[in-house]
Amino acid sequence: MNQVFYADPEHQPFAFPGGSSRALLIHGFLGSPRELRPLARELADAGVTARGVLLPGFGEDISQLKHVRADDWLGAARRAWVETRRDAEHTTLIGFSMGGAVALCLATEAGLAPDRLILLAPHWKFADRRTVVLPIAKYLIREFKPFGRVDFDNPDIRRMFADMAPGADLDDPEVRHQLRDSATIPTHALDELRRIGVSAAKAAPRVSVPTTILQGLQDTTSLPAYTRALAARMGADLLEFPGDHLIVDPGKPSWATVRDAIVRLATAANPV
Image (cartoon, rainbow, N blue to C red):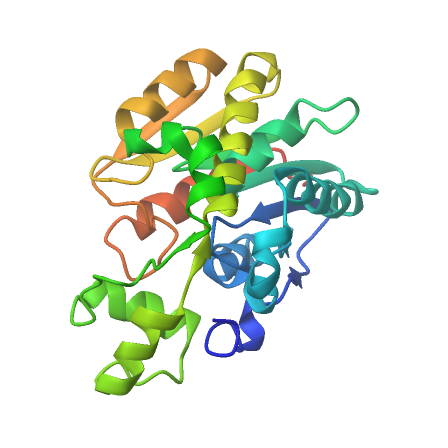
């Protein structure tokens, strides 16, 4: 799978200089810093130094995902966050999807609270209730094929692959066959995703900093009802709007809403 996906340098970590205010952006499951680069560029243009971390087991490291634990994701984000915070006048911690769970956990650690926490379609609970069996299923079913039944003619699917594997010809039957048959995800990784979500839910009541959650109303991955429950548990501000899960995609109608809200929040305390 790693031979096809994530070869583009944009999947690597980034740092866009802005000013003395700083933000760390944490990507989602099977994602990479690339998905947050457009947002980071907007922040840098607004005077906020923006950094994106690559979590273990993703990007070109995808072949190692079966060996990665939730604590590894948290550890990598923690190291990046400590570096991001150093000498900053104002700090913003931003997490998308699974990255939201990681950011939420970090925000409650001693000495690591940001000045502001922003969660984008945060993961903390699976939409599919069958995932309750993951702690057992991971020993019985070692991996699954995520693209086995995918519609390669779907515009959203094609856009996703354009980001992940720009050189893949999705109109080539052989390429489609390889993607359907060869690309696998370890069930163990899904259980680690479950574990980081559980940790985030437990940490939520301990968040003591201003927090805003952005959520698309048509999201079938991070369900709006679950996000409302999380916001209530945290006492967070919740901004809902029409949109699916990929609210960080500049090609989506929700992009302007997301971009403007995050830039406004992250620059609210910028030094004059």
